[in-house]
Length: 639
Image (cartoon, rainbow, N blue to C red):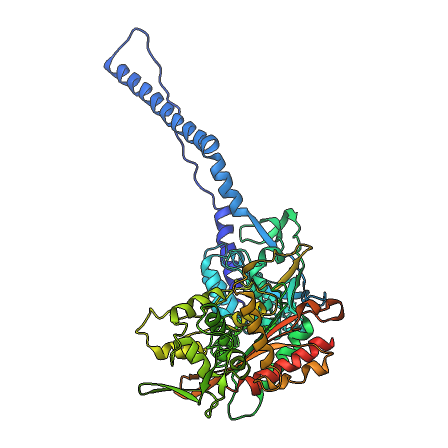
């Protein structure tokens, strides 16, 4: 098959040769004048000749002056401008990609690195015959797509944008190279290139937190971070591109190197993440989602932090995606399939999605009730399984009730009736009220972003009662973490960290160190709660994971781990899905050691706060808490 592009080259060269060898007539400005003047004879004829003579001289001088002026303008006044235009037409920069910094976990284990990779590039100056016909470049792209899959829509867009060098595909396999090498020799605008390519060693496991890279939006093909820390720390990780300045011929083909500047590698980066904890959390979430059960779980998230610093030890969202697929080149159809996946694999459920927090919110309601002096720690209410206001009934999760309940008992058994009462007021107890609930939610960081150092975080929603007609029943259900209140797993874990570390709310940090420099720890707030009330909330959280509490999978944890005590809270929130079906979300949040001053980091007992969230199914006690148990077992055993 005769190559279309070569035919166009032949036509162009033939026209050029004809033009160069065609003889042109040389225009004559003036001719010699033959006259013989006769002295002392001034006839009319002679006077006429003299006038013509001087007129001719004037015309010659005038034309000469015009040419001299034009030459002066071109050479002196406009010379630099035309020289610049000329250089632009014959000088090109070829960019070389720098190696991105290597990404390590907290123990210096590699998470993301670089590897040499082959790609295919197209020079649009050549394939368009010196920018005469960009459609020829689109024809070339379609032809290459016959041998290897490329994103034709992206490539066509970049051709129209006027990019000089377009990466058709990257991360080519050996079989792709074999196909191409025997075919692209006929297409001078396409070359096989080598460059460093990002290699994510654990595929889906770190996708939502480390992120991935891709082509930037500039005319030059530069690799940039697209999500995760790859994006938020791109300035440090990316390095500085290098390149060669080359002189090109009329068709854009390079034939002489003028100068070269080497690329500068990016800075290595160490994360607070723990590789083994992250892998274990991912495996447990995957197992929970894939389990065959009636109350089907559709996704989930795990967040873990060192409560003493806010450092993020694990951040997992499931389902996930393989960033290597995106880096190595993905077709438009494959990308469309991922985007339309009903399980939303690109969705970061840990920080980019917010859900009703269920009974984990009772930490906020209990704090507000004590701080606003709505109730004392010893005050009891009688729970018969519900409260009734007019014709409306608000039920406890345990339908026959818990009997006499005070603050500690309410946190231990997660009693709804108690929190309805202290939240909205009932039976002579005034209640906190929605305004105070809103204020305390805000103090704990709800309804606002935590400031974690990865992109895409949402702030959730903390209702204030002003955005709609608000009723007492709305306050009741808000008090137990239902209704309109929405939180991210990251926000709930931050609150848990506050009750673990002595009363400090830190900004969460994924990154621990950049090339020897550590980001500054940032305190969001501290000492929100009176020390006596603070200790009471903690005691209730400790009782929740001991016999008699809702966190039964962890009842024997202290016996199995040399006396390490925990504090935690279960949560099961109810909602109606898109099909109108009643469903639940499962929550469990926990911290340990309970007495944080007894922790010993040298023995792999770094303190930890941990939140497990399961979307669309299960309960906090039955489904989320067992996952937390396995993660804590691994963490405190050092395995």
